[in-house]
Length: 278
Length: 278
Image (cartoon, each protein chain N blue to C red):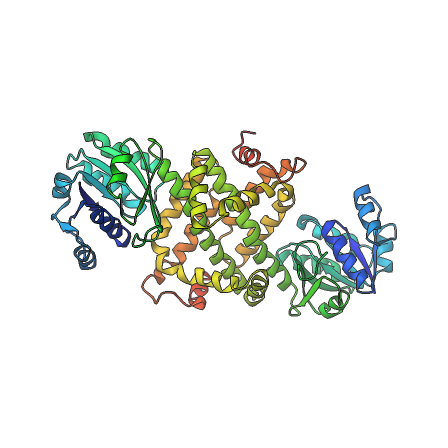
């Protein structure tokens, strides 16, 4: 199978490498992409076919792996080429947005698969899971058989894999945001040391681990903002309060311009940004 | 020292028992209290002095341990007796409300201590901490020396112990509420089994432990609503987003009328309440 990847970031390129190791060809389109993406794609054996139209012409399967807010635009760009193969949306979007993506791509007869990637970039077996729902889920799963990426088949319902992704990320990223808010508050009120001491009593290294979580946030905060809004939307759609993840989005917004600083960041730097006193 | 307890619930009576084991006398006022409170107080050796006025007349130290929303009313009732001893507010209130309490009680010359109780009722050494801030903190700490309750002395600043309590509970109870929202969303969207399966891959028993946390919430949800509002207020006062804990308050509100059901509750019952389909 020829699988086209739109747009191979650090996660996308690892998924492409899994497809290659499973015996498929991985294609990409360099048109309009930066030198870092080109280097990453070449390093891992992706074949450059030039532009999105060519990618859609040559691919049996197209994988969209992009920031959640871009998912519909990417789908539209693919639909405009008249693509009618299998289209996998592997993005962290709400079930509602996933269904909107499906509506866009299915116009020309493409078969849409809802994909949810859970875990780190797929370089080690058992660490990365691609959950798949929708009628063509099995055809996509076989593209990765024998690779380090674990494909998990769900039902034929578009939106199911996305719902799982939203619920899963709601805890990991929501907890990271909550810890930021807590340590920001503790610092502002002069009780951070006392809080850390109490956390250490609760369990060895808890304080260290929690501050390390907070220090790791700025490297990713900029691309988690949209995802938090997708989760908030998912909660609201399911009748649950959306406040956890709207607050998380606000936390990540405050930390987003530490993107280009050293990572992990210093705790004082992160808390200063959260408190608006950088 | 004679220490008066207003109003000894399951936590309060354990603190009183610690004071007794440290050689102090523990007093309480049965006026207007129910038979369960009376039985608990008698069982643990608290002396009944009748009413609040008498309690204030006879006590060197008064401890207020009550729901956060009642903290100011309790302080007012004590102030009205002309009490001028040491007044410990051990409630889960924001630093701002703690300062309001201090303002009320200090009118007659009482010395106010900000107390924060962290942990379970104090029946076992090393499990319960009473953090104390304010000028008279050391006088209060000695009332518990040698007991299973660990008194921790902070600064002389009223509001500091409360700030610590708010930050600490922000994580424990905020995470419990977040888990409720996540499992409520997952159930509504039909992905609870898939989510639990993914959680189990992340670590053995995570799914079981997280559902157990959710099942344990209804027993306490009714008395955590106010506390979440205090935490939200504390976050806002410290310049951090208050949405996590306003959402937590909403979650606990939905579960509050499961108070009288069996505990721990069944997961289906809890999720049904959260989804409004009980």
